[in-house]
Amino acid sequence: MNQASSSFRATADVRPRVRYAPTDTAQTLLQAPGTLAVFDFDGSAAHADDPRRLRVPLRTPSAHPAPLEHWQVEATVEHGREGALQWSSGGGWLFAALTLDEREHGGPEGAARESYAQLCAFLERRPQRHVQRLWNYLAHINDGEGDAERYKQFCAGRLDGMRDFFRDGFPAATAIGHRLDAPLLQVYCLAAEQPGERIENPRQMSAWRYPRQYGPTPPSFARAMRLRGDASLAISGTASITGHESQHHGDLQAQLHETLTNLRALLRSSALPERFDDGDPLKVYVRHAEDAPTVEAFLAEHVPDAPRLLLLGDVCRRELLVEIDGWRFA
Ligand code: 3EB
Image (cartoon, rainbow, N blue to C red):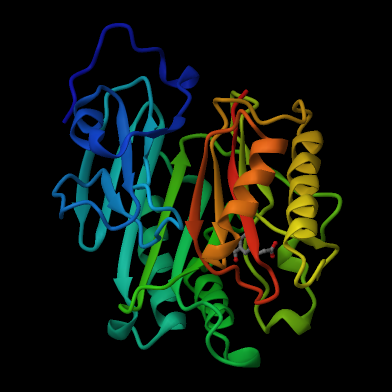
């Protein structure tokens, strides 16, 4: 457990910060005061005992090792494990993660139900029970046809596992497919003592209202969440969708433009300047490794200052080639 520093602010003011950090700094980050979580991509990390460290089952398309992601608060952090769940908390914020093997839960629906049931049961007992942001990484998300597609099974299990925990509204989220052989479902969240404010995108239908054609259970997420006591925005996975329809099938460049227009619309909806600066990290999920240079060139032109992490991942609609999530810190 970290030691407190006398310069820490009162809980009500503490803001979480999210940054990318060099690959080889994990131990330094874990020893730094206020570290809530350190994420490894690319499978590079050896097994770590610290419950704040999470190995994310995604790879970069690039030859360079992925950076780490670092969550930090100006507060004393405590951490632990409870069954399959790993957690940390400090300054009114909480990180929690579960990585389940689907084979132990009868597939994607059962694994999602179990993940959400466990996560919600844990959160219910914590003062930091207000989920701001959730990430879901599911193996081979587009396998299966029609209503049997694995993403749709996941959506059914997720909503079921949530019971009425999100009766006031769903948090911001990402759901992306990974390509590991092992059918692991990873779910992690950032939660807080205070509820956030859900933000929808006027260019898009709210996902929980999507029509039946997208599956029997509509996806359970808000387009973004504004953090309490701070105008910062946690932005959900955002893609080339307007209304409820995917746009620009097969056209990467046009999908990138539509996605950026959607991201800007979310900033406008929350009265933030329509920019991403050097403190606003973005995560960019690319379906085809060969698209990475085009995606990187687009980002260099349109969001040159934003730190960005490109990851290989499958968007939950097969026709979508790219999805972006991230943060706009006030
Ligand atoms: C979309 O806008 C694209 O199921 O949690 C984005 C963010 C998407 C989150 C989720 C799905 C999810 O519908 C897909």
